[in-house]
Length: 174
Image 1 (cartoon, helix red, strand yellow):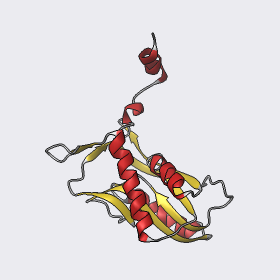
Image 2 (cartoon, rainbow, N blue to C red; image 1 turned 90 degrees about the vertical axis):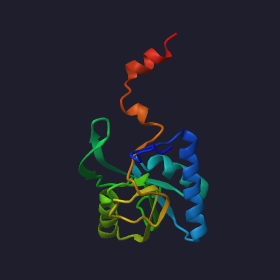
Image 3 (cartoon, rainbow, N blue to C red; image 1 turned 45 degrees about the horizontal axis):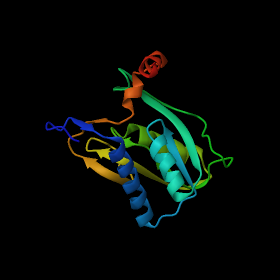
């Protein structure tokens, strides 16, 4: 649900999963076949997992981090992992890079550059996201929703960003 001022987008679990399914349909209908899904942790893990299951393709993971301050709402310096975790040895062939959104575009641009530069066994690389903001300098190959007002997206699992084990204990105590 987008607020009237266009500054916040609140997404339920059902909406989130529906959007991932729509992303899968877009990729499938493009006719492009790929060998591996590479998701960016953390935002791309949930979409990557679902796409991996739907397409029956192995899931590789690359960790990136830039949103760390103020419960993940302030972008800082981008850190990109030097290694990719994959069940098939080295990542190779046609790779679908998956993240949740193209916000500024900085992360996706930097990761695509790193993959093309440092991972020569990758023969083709495409990107898929749920949301693309208007301010993004990166244009993904596949995207479900374009957000012209650049809202802050409140994803359904964000409540865990500020939750600690003691709070879970209190929540589930009898």
